[in-house]
Length: 128
Length: 139
View 1 (cartoon, each protein chain N blue to C red):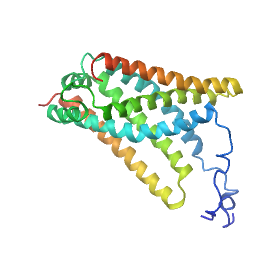
View 2 (cartoon, each protein chain N blue to C red):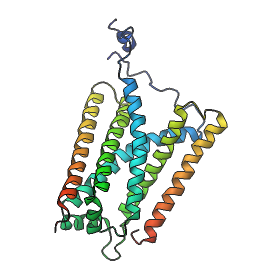
View 3 (cartoon, each protein chain N blue to C red):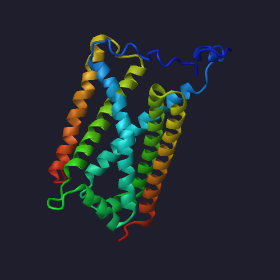
């Protein structure tokens, strides 16, 4: 292991032992996204009305709120993995680290907000 | 990092003749990024507005729709149609990638036909979904 070029510094170290997991989880969540988002689109299109009370009634059922929470987890995890690859392709050195940290904050923060909102509607129902 | 910034990273990008497979490949990345940022923010915004109660949801709907007709304003409509197409293009292209992962579909004609099929299907499904929404008077 030398301290010259990028390839020279990693040659002989072997694999990082996490590439396969990233690749597999990207495919796994692609499959769960396909099922859950198809359910979401069909479920919303089948609603008789799209006003506040109709949406709250829909989301109050565990058969809507639970798949929606699962969809949030699946989708936010999927795009975290995907945007990580995009960032790694176009950003280098210091800006790459910053971008990956911001991506993690956005994905985890966004998912937490969404899941909180779904739970609030599911447990509290309609509020004036 | 010992990287010479003067050296090009991808010197091959500009010398190839464009084909459908290249367009679908970069669209997969572009639509995925648009969905993650635009779709993610809009989805969280919608859910938070809904969780805030009737008045908070009314403010969200008021921002997105016209007071006169109750239909979507042009900008939210444009964003939502764009995100719908992005989602469907990413979905079709994603399914194509899952098939390619099995080692199938790399023959030139099959690969080109598959790439074109993702574009045709995503555009047709976008028209179908927004046709339904228009029919119900929300667009």
